[in-house]
Amino acid sequence: MERPAKKRRYDYTLLIVVLLLVSIGLVLLYSTSSYNGRVKFHDSFYYLKKQGFATVLGMAGMLIVAKIDYHKWVPLANLGYLTAILLSVAVIFIGDEYNGSKRWLSLGPVSFQPSEFAKVAVILFLACLVTKNVKKMGKFRTLIKVLVPVLPIVGLVGASNLSTAIIIMGIAVVLIFVASPKYAQFIWMGAAGVGFMGIFLALESYRMERLAIWRNPEMYEKGYQTLQGLYAIGSGGLFGRGLGESVQKLGFLPEAQNDMIFSIICEELGLVGASFIILLFLILIWRFFVIATHAKDLLGALIATGALAHMMIQVILNIAVVTNSIPNTGITLPFISYGGTSVMFLLLEMGLVLSVSNLIE
Image 1 (cartoon, rainbow, N blue to C red):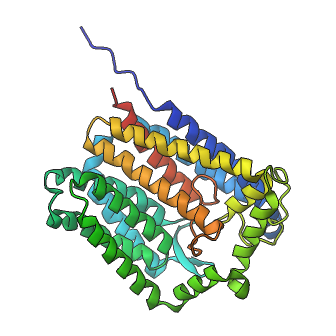
Image 2: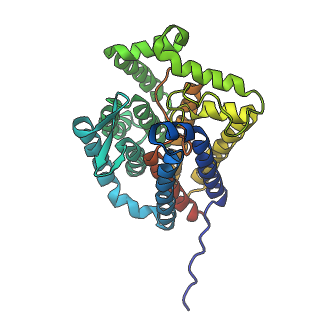
Image 3: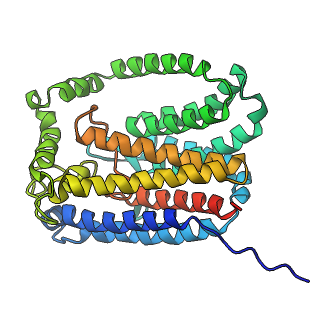
């Protein structure tokens, strides 16, 4: 007698939260970007249409990836990581430069950021690599062996996009940390990381300038964006001015739809609205944790953990930048900031985690 096909048991809480974040993100993006779109492109829906198109592609990709057993991606993990390196090299030589940063590659009318693909590629690559070496993860030599292959992509991405390089390195450290039975060696790694970061900052004068701007934004012309963002947060109060009623987005806060969109959320929806967005991210991270702890095998657990690290680091860094808790690093708020490549690969990553949840019994 033929066995009935296994009914899929996706983590529907995760799926619902993702759909909520994507939907709310599109509404907030339109509210934030309509003025800029009208002024620059004579179309208040300009940014929304581009983000909406990328979101539709990402949603379709997420549903397809969610139905595929995540073990089938293992043979492609090395190829995916190698592709990420090659694309990052291509950005250095033939990449497009916007606002002083060379982060985009153009393929005809389509442009994308390879660094967003690199995040997903690193999660899958490291999950496979750690799984292969899990029995020897207690040895410092194995720890270095697993970490070293990630350094080329960190260096290549960091050349033009320090914030994304920090996220990729953070994902790598978290994945290695959860798989290692010995924690003392991470103290030495942390000390080496701090030393490396100090040298990296000192190599370029503009990086040290960012530290000075962070400490006293009112004394520097480049601190203008930070100050306008803080004005937006302060003027929102408890319940905000109301959706669509932001003043700072009317040309005062530069590129408000990108890295600084959280400040407009605070202005329009207030502390209550901003807290709700943060709550959705916390639920998302909690579901990643639940999936990781109940995953069928170590590979699935590491994939979910990688997504957890990615989301947690990126959300914390974005909100910290907007509130001027750390220097400005140009990092987006997942699902909400404008960026088609970002939302598309984030949704593919969510599909990967949903495929892990599908095999939980």
